[in-house]
Amino acid sequence: MDVFSYNYDRKQIKSGILHIGVGNFHRAHEEFFTNKLLEYPDQQHWGIHGAMLLPTDEHLYKSLIKQDNEYTLTVCGRNGQDKTYRIGSLVSLDWSLENPENILSAIADKDIRIITLTITEGGYNIEKSTGEFILNDEGVRHDLQNPHTPKTTFGYVAEGLRRRKSAGNGAVTILSCDNLQHNGDTARKSFMSFVKAQDTKLAAWMEENVTFPNSMVDRITPATRPDDVVRLNTKNGTNDEAPVYCEDFIQWVIEDKFIAGRPAWERVGVEFTDDVTAYENMKLSLLNASHTLLSYPSFLAGYRKVDDAMRDERIVRFVRTFMDIDITPYVPTPSNIDLDLYKQTLIERFGNRSVSDQIARLCFDGISKFPIYVMPNLIKMIQDDADLTRVAYLIAAYRHYLKYRTDDKGNSFEIAEPWMTQKDVNLIDSHEPTDFLSLSAFRSTDLMAADAFLKSYLTMVDAIKSNGAMSVLESIL
Image (cartoon, rainbow, N blue to C red):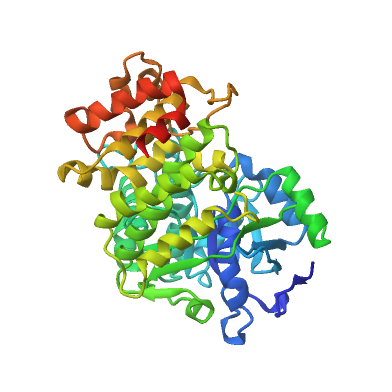
């Protein structure tokens, strides 16, 4: 397969963006858009300086450094036709365990005018029940007491901005690219809460010199496993230690609130708007909630790839009914979107054979995902006395997944819940199914007080344990 290379001289590119969290999604999304934009001569000051802050980043960091930060991105078409691009927009890269000073200096650099983030939904360190920043987090406590030797994202940004302020290097925008409703507002809450606790003078400077636009991001990007590396390199005729693959759909809608200038991303397909709310609601409530809905039942049924699950008509009917009946009444549609077409496109995207996303990726970190993707609409459904069958089934399936860790076929599996507390573990271990409804993921409402939900949920818990997840799904279809 031909690899389409960028059409610019990397030696002429200057960094104008610092990105924290150089994972697969970022490399398939922001880097993809920016890679195309850098072909415009007047945009070549918007290269990206990557910053990695986690010990687990070591392998990817070393692989990218070995390749001068270049990598291949294979875009998998729903029609079976794939395209592979060589991405050159990541012009420099640092890892905090090796070059912390480089990251701090870059944040302070006057040429860096935007700090972008992909630090995951849980990375903003917000207590789910109160909506407040968690100041007693171990890493946060360290950074509050040791401002010049930070460990967390908040500590790095604060120290970098402190140096920026001291040097008179001007304003900067912090742009979240994570799957959160009003992600800019969440970022502002997190960073300002931290800085106010650490340095009130810096907080006052940030109030005048930092903006936090909201944005909506969308592109399904699976984890790249070792067998994927071999597969992609064989298919593409490359020798890339850090390849990425993703679907052909891509969307980025950004609130146009940049205090220090921005790239002309609109030239390459990014949409700028005064208010991203409708786009956020639509995407989080339909795509992300549907991903969560299909993940646990499908995994319990023995499926491991999303496209395989979407070849099961029972799962397709379940997802489409959820979209049409449970979600559509609560989704104000942006004026330029055909909602029926959007939902049909989602079904096609989920079933994309070339992407073949892992269901385990969708199951990952449900503790952080339920409060964002499922609970807001569930609260409205309870208030409206709506049919709660499908969501009750989902939560019963989630309990079974966490508690028994065995699917309908008898296969055991490990779970990955990085934000699970000891209290959550105790609630999951309890033999009383109602205790599970006090899980931190569900704290935004009292599910025990919703009689219709509770009755349906308890029925589903018993039925899944006795008959298996797919048998119960058939009964509710």
